[in-house]
Image: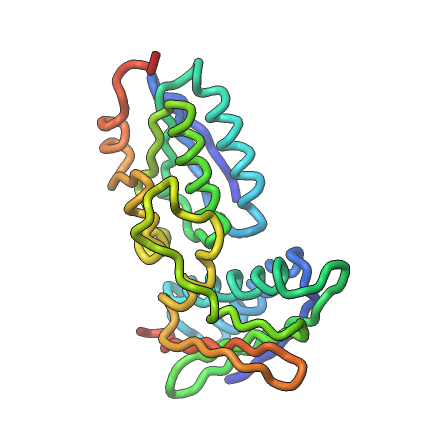
Length: 119
Length: 138
């Protein structure tokens, strides 16, 4: 799996590309944790744009769940957006779309994000 | 070409090997590509479950995966020679639990049960056998 990053005015966008399976989960988790640790000063929001994510297994769901909790603890606005149909199905079946904030596309996610950094 | 099988050790490094085995079967049988993900997910979840929980410490198991295409669908069977364990005996996670209450584990087998048309477990001799079936066009 490849991971790209984009920095917007008040949000960092992470773009995982390919397959988030057991083999990719640990590396992805480390990257997201590093971003959450740095986000206190850099961004008010972290958005994971899943438009290029073809596959997610329970190992990947676990990373999203842990990241959501870590962001909540750190007071960072956190959301996913642009799930592909296959990934969406896994989120819906597992019930994760009810506990993790998921937006239809990136523009919607950015619009929902706080417009000023948290104090 | 309607039936293929392979055996790998219970090592996470074998996951890509199994994915390739499944993908080769899929293209050779000319099955709809969009449906492959269901079987890929099921294979990863069941295989990793055996890898992580099936082998007594310090031992490796042999895991055999077979695929069989019939009129009633595609059947994937995963067998291991570990201690008797029925993954279908695990209680399903509470999908209505809140963020803080939701356990981080236990999702895999639940997803497999949701996505397959049928899933069954049998202890056959010294082996655990998990059989999953779904019509690949469904």
